[in-house]
Image (cartoon, rainbow, N blue to C red):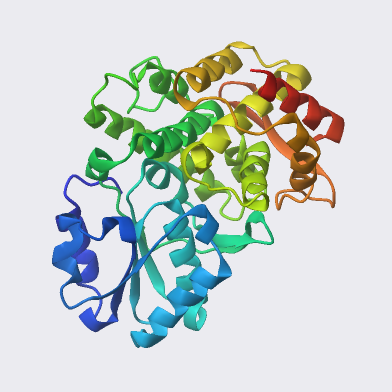
Length: 355
């Protein structure tokens, strides 16, 4: 739910639980946040340094230890406050602790608001592969307060905006009332000026993205079919993130998740044009956004074989060594379960690196 006042939205939820059975798992970047300080009084909390490199079993174990030290029971509530990495980790820890404790998400980044905190996917990275250990565990509620965006670093904002663009490209509903009449979500997002449009104008687009994802998740909670449309850009995007973990490089800056997904969408749009006859305009529009705001990917041609090998190990593949993508015939017309060959993957990477 999108709320205008995080305090008034959170208070009634907390009132349903005994105070000694509410714990907060919080991104340490929010240590001095005045927004939540009133709820830390008398409430057990743990602050975590959360980056993609720390999305690991060791961090999950740290959260479990905190639950035990807090004497949390199965009647308790875990409140996860932070970005997508934190909500994934806290959600997994809550779902597996004593066979399941309620979890409430308070996403504080644009990416978490529009994607990661909705849909119930939880987990962590393992053996250098993104989210390869995890489960579906929907939170009892997600409270989205756009006010967090006021203090978001520009790169974090762009990371979330990339996931919103993905939703716009695959959203099959073209008449959301939160978008200007006559527009689909994709067109409304393109019209949002990243340089001049005020943040409060983004609120209806956040709501539209959340609504689009919720429609898909409601129809396919466990990603047996339709939900795979939300993986657009992620087969290539996850490999681009993973190569950084394999190489021991930082996931900050241009290797935030949304940046990798944007690069992945360009590669998969290229394949959509070549294989499905998708019009070139979305590819051109996304490429302009990349060059104007995101910069080019920092991988090299020498990473090509390693990237293809990582894609062959992707958890979305239905057969070993297969590369499975979601592509689009046009905006709002996604096609799931598109198997591509290593040669086609290499061609798409070559195109991406040539930009």
